[in-house]
Amino acid sequence: MMVLIVAGIVHLPEQLKAHEIPNDIIVQAYLKADGAVANLAIRVPLEAMRDMNFPVHGPGYLELDQISELTLDAAEIWLANFIDVYEGQRKIEDWRIADTRISLPSDRSFGNYQTALHSFSLPDLAKDSLLHYEQALLDVLIEYPIQSNGQNFSIDLNLGGLSLNTATVLTYVTPDGTSRLYEFRGSPGLVELDPTWYESFLRFVISGFDHILGGLDHLLFIFCLVLPCRQLRPLIITITAFTCAHSITLMAAAFGMVPKVLWFPPLIEMLIALSIVYMALENILRNNFQDRWPIAFAFGLIHGFGFSFALSETLQFAGQHLITSLLGFNLGVEIGQLFMIIIAVPILNYLFHLVISEKLGILVLSILLAHTAWHWMLDRYEILSAYQVTNFSLGAMTAEEYLSWFGLVIIISLILLTLKKGFKVFQNKG
Image 1 (cartoon, one colour):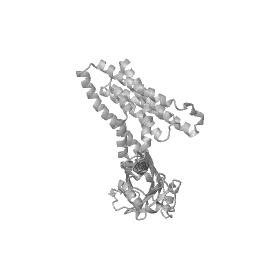
Image 2 (cartoon, rainbow, N blue to C red; image 1 turned 90 degrees about the vertical axis):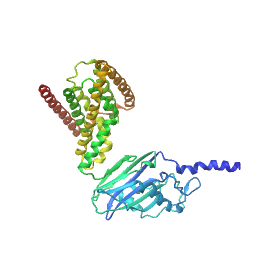
Image 3 (cartoon, one colour; image 1 turned 90 degrees about the horizontal axis):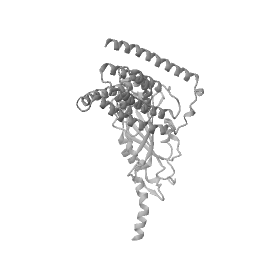
Image 4 (tube, one colour; image 1 turned 60 degrees about the horizontal axis):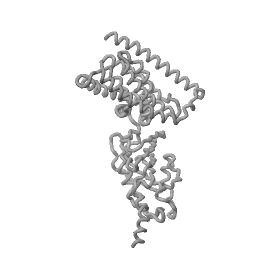
């Protein structure tokens, strides 16, 4: 009996491994309309197909002659059931799993759509191949009947449950052969593969709104601007200057006008924290906040680069509508800022009227803001200090890059002068 118990304990981990959630997996997928169907070819590690009990022998080698039915079941349960493909507004319901196959980790057939599709016509692996289930890849071909060979497709790859951290690389091949690459983590929701301008605009308005509300450092900077100056006219001037500035650098970054060095993003993140420290200290030491817009403009240029880092991950969903998407993201950010101001101003007015004096309230809140941002700045400086900042050389820039940066400086200068004249007229009218 003792021997049986010991043997069971030794054998138990091998049985449980197939049911554990993998930490990280990468899913490769290709979608292309081909005649009367849209083909979706997917490659996923077999270990992500949990609770399927694939037959194994020895230390975990697959019984390749006994798993064909199980791979079909796994493809339906773990993949096809979690994928929705739309043609226009119509969800394609009558899909079918055309084929599945087990591949070696060294197999390179998913390098492009044609080789991936062709791989399903190749002979299966030899039944006596020694392939551990943790190394095996499951290739699946799903066919979706379509009514036209157009480009108006959307897809919802809800594959985040395959692992703790699922990364999906989807290539959409248009009818003219153009490939569009999408990379995302978890389940991104419905993705329009060839979005209209208004679909891109709406997606990025929502993205900008979500980003500003989820970006605590940006919100605290806005709060620093609002805290001592809640009068409508100077507040409009200050927020407008900040908005114009971050719009400039956001669009510049979207067109690649940022240093191609690893230390630039952590530098910007540190400077954003520094901007909060500075504005909080100014709230403590300064008496007149009516003409604060130049410093808001200067820090807005920095915050624009910060917005661009978040935008870079979602810009792949813009399709052919880059400018429209940038405008939508900017609008979403502005709506988020306005939402923040609408909430903050009456709360602060109430607080300073009934709870604490305005001067003392500004002092206490500014100290708290400066303290918080100071620690952020120190933490981000530690990250920045791990990079070799000296790697960036002006001599390595091309003539085109010099011209682009010169043009950006000219644009910033012209907008700055325009704002100065416009704000002067606006103040005089008041």
